[in-house]
Length: 380
Image 1 (spheres, rainbow, N blue to C red):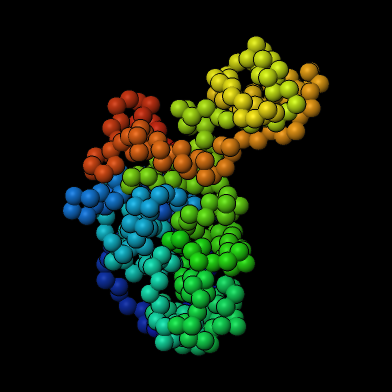
Image 2: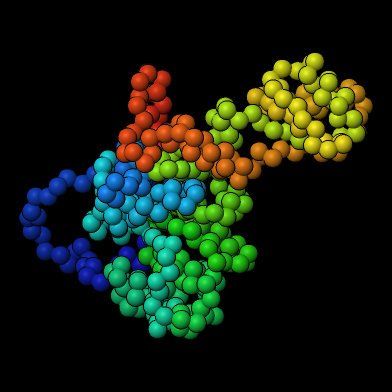
């Protein structure tokens, strides 16, 4: 993202005032296409002794908002800390904006990281804290304070910025962390559980701010357990279980990959048994029917689109009164639980998590699928 205060950073010198001299030969910089706003991982792993936290993750994320989901202990925080340059991968390749992030100031200057842990300086005001973070990013004191005020206002702390953070509520402390995350206008935002402790009004402010920055060209990767907010913000998901990305993409696309789970459609109508009989004799793709109440039929199908159309057709032909059609599968929470169960049973890529072994690519189709992971938005 562009930085309007770039010339206010300490140590910047106008080009015309710099004497011309021969520069020492240095390592060639990455090409612009390789240094764009992106996160790229190839067979990325991180282990602690015999415990594998992240195993053989390959993906390529471009600008936009990506939701990172997974149960506790699935490797989300370790994955984010590697991207943030706080820890070094044990194996594999990781680049952020074209370069490895670990111990690389050029990359770290383009990253904003909001950790899950709360370790603020209680004796400082919100303005003092965020201003100090801006100064550490290279801005002079006046510019740092100006940017800090704007960042705190963006997250609704304009009336509390001169109060000491020791008196902040949990939600206010969370918003102060987010303000320091964006104060230097980073290209990549890494947010570990940014909605923790926030009330509905605060969550709305936070999600609006993330949407604005993504629209401006930033890459936003955030982990959360507040699933309804994820559905309203983005349909680009990364689901991690047992240290591996078990699914990536839109919710509908991921749901179609779960062949072992037939789609459930719940129909409330006046003659559910008659509807069940009509569907079984006239339509294919249906693998099961169950009655959840005197007027509720649940249909299990491998072909949801065709089955929805068939239900409507049979209802019209029979003239029965239809009250509702819903699906217990049509939400992110159900999808999340399906994928966690799948990984825990050892199917898919999750089978090798915890052992340090990666997926074996035994066929041309499997190899092609793995290669697709390295395209932007790939990895499904």
